[in-house]
Length: 86
Image 1 (cartoon, rainbow, N blue to C red):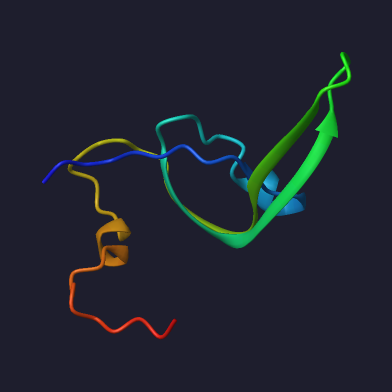
Image 2 (spheres, rainbow, N blue to C red; image 1 turned 180 degrees about the horizontal axis):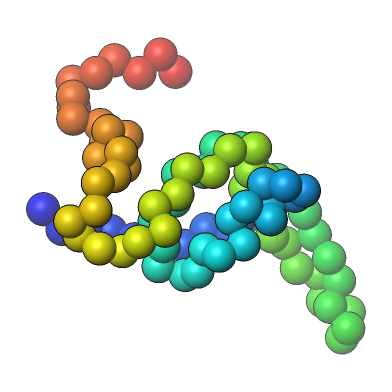
């Protein structure tokens, strides 16, 4: 199986933001929250749109060691025949 990686902008406020301040690009994390789309105008007058996750929970594994125990595999969908209700 080929592993895929996606980098998605996430926002965390307050104590949650402080607690995950050591995360860096490449660290594995499970983020639960809501999608937010916002727009802003650049200095040269162009309108830009940003979609990001506003986090309310973050599960982390601060090590990239392959032998470290992690619960990330439990989030993988192993039942491909599962009925999705939407």
